Image 1 (spheres, rainbow, N blue to C red):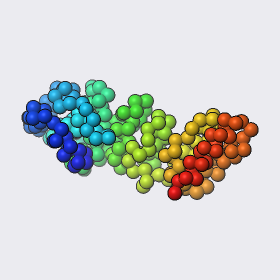
Image 2 (cartoon, helix red, strand yellow):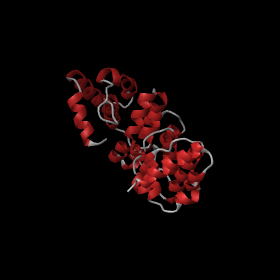
Image 3 (cartoon, rainbow, N blue to C red):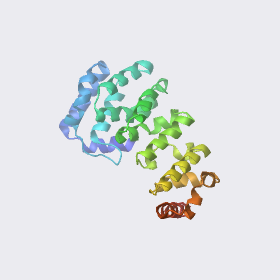
Image 4 (cartoon, rainbow, N blue to C red):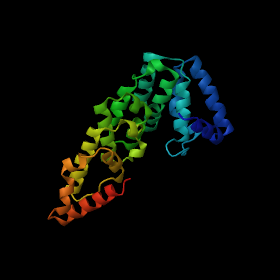
Length: 238
């Protein structure tokens, strides 16, 4: 969790909420099992309002509680997996958002949270998918898994700006897959998300290989118009 999120959380919590969170963190540090009862109560005790673009108050408070666990490695992974499996969507999202922070605190945790990432990417819950494609996924998904995570975001209309590590991890194969996706959209006369074009632009040749440019000469007016819009958007990418 970025330090600025901690700062904003501290400023937003009421004195009562701050006292509850501090006390609960101490209890969790002494007895990890205490977190199972406290975790669902965070929204009610601390608040659920939006904290930043990506974080709610409850998200940030839950991550603090998770960071207070005195567990390491597989014991930590087992505990957060239990919390995730028994939690509602908001609790599951917070667990996913905590993964990179927990790894920063405990390097032996590296990679152990990947099953939770894979599980979230199999859902159609955009809040869970967005939480899953954060820094932890960027660090640990293999190349194929990362590409399919990006495609999942594109298919579910999640902005690619929410995908961590895209500039470094986008490769020629991902660009090819995005071009194929764009071609399918254009063939159906549908809009293509504009945020795929920087990835495509970075890998010359992928667009031409997809056959999309030829759609600009399609006899079908809807396909032709969709192709023209897509190619105009691509041309505007620097």
